[in-house]
Length: 392
Ligand code: PMP
Image 1: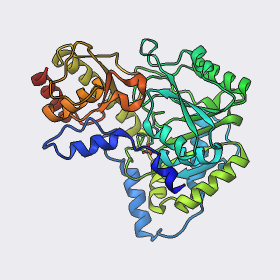
Image 2 (image 1 turned 180 degrees about the horizontal axis):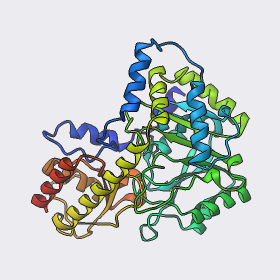
Image 3 (image 1 turned 135 degrees about the vertical axis):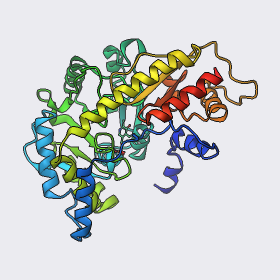
């Protein structure tokens, strides 16, 4: 395992973060983090937990009250037929949920079909479990969705699972109910698992609905779903997520991966999670309304300020503008990059103080695009747009 870890890559996002430290007064549109604060219900619950000395070891899979609330949420909001809170495990954020799923599910060489473009830690976690991520394109003209025939063509004798991420980071593509029904039918026909990453389940625009694959008839038996408090409740740094699975044998394995990496998830943070779920959900809708306004502000600003250098449809979900670079754009002659998206990223950071992530970092199909996060506050977005006006 030691030398094997030498072959597991870090994401380019880390490289960008390091580049951003050399920039004064940067516009941090590179980070996938919201500028909102966690709701008071979370902060009060954590303060109370500290005052009541809730600083001791807990149950490995999570506080019973939190698991109960999550079971209720998964049944009523996601429509997943959860029979008992035992089917849920609390994790250190969504990324840890994905880690324990991959550790429990995969044998060396097992293939998992992943979207291209995709969130880089997905392939990283598959690799950490000695699996192989097999990219399948999301197509921009289809609203960054699959060609379902092409998805099926990626299945081989080694395929173990299809990882779906809707809404998708970085493209903002949202799979339709009919897409997900087809994917579930495919998984049933070919004996595959579905790993469903629903990190952005609450970040949908223009009346789009979120569909949890495990809610579809017969799907829960073969679906491992992961969620996070990071985006819905602006809790990115607190690190709280959860997974839900019906399969008891896989849950036993996941519990070991959870125990040996975390023992239990931070007590204070779990009480914060209880506060989030027991409290008013008004902040979730307020975040969504504000993100809609920021999305519109950013796309209007790109149309007005970027001199035709970027194009793209407004996303239906998640909070990223994944914009295509006009092929006529020429990087400065000193650019060291063959990759247009890296050349553009370096140009925006070094000349415009604008943080962004090259599309190539999300997969070969992301080349030619750059990702900007529009969940930053309006002043930061406006500053970046002004800077683009000067550059372009
Ligand atoms: N899945 C996707 C697609 C994400 O973009 C993220 C966060 N960027 C996560 C999962 C996990 O987030 P966290 O670990 O903060 O819960």
